[in-house]
Image (cartoon, rainbow, N blue to C red):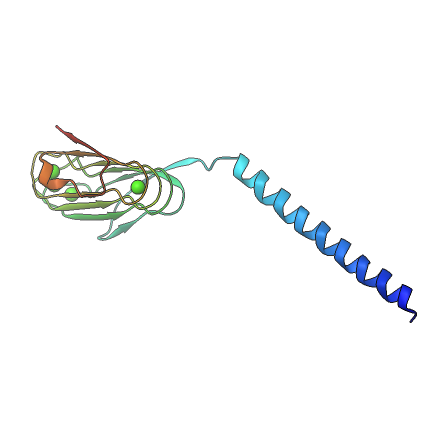
Length: 137
Ligand SMILES: [Ca+2]
Ligand SMILES: [Ca+2]
Ligand SMILES: [Ca+2]
Ligand SMILES: [Ca+2]
């Protein structure tokens, strides 16, 4: 193979790499353009886990049932305010979350994680340091 031919074949490889990179970037940016749908989840177990979708998660049905709810990523709403007389813990993690533990008792914990989180509580003691807004109801 001549030197010129070698240079040309190297150049062809570089062009192919560049095209591959551009294609990858294009496909990932188009994925960002379509927001994931909001899903709702009724907790049946302790602990209860969400996923990376934008979710509304409800505590287990019935008074006196403690809940430990992990919403994980994205913008979530954790509803642990439907039933009372229980120790509920809600963790939002990534994204700006709404965490409701204003259920009439003061045994619960709301933990926003990263993002700008809103925590609805019966008393300040239920709100973690990672609640950017604390609403006492
Ligand atoms: Ca509960
Ligand atoms: Ca409670
Ligand atoms: Ca409470
Ligand atoms: Ca959060």
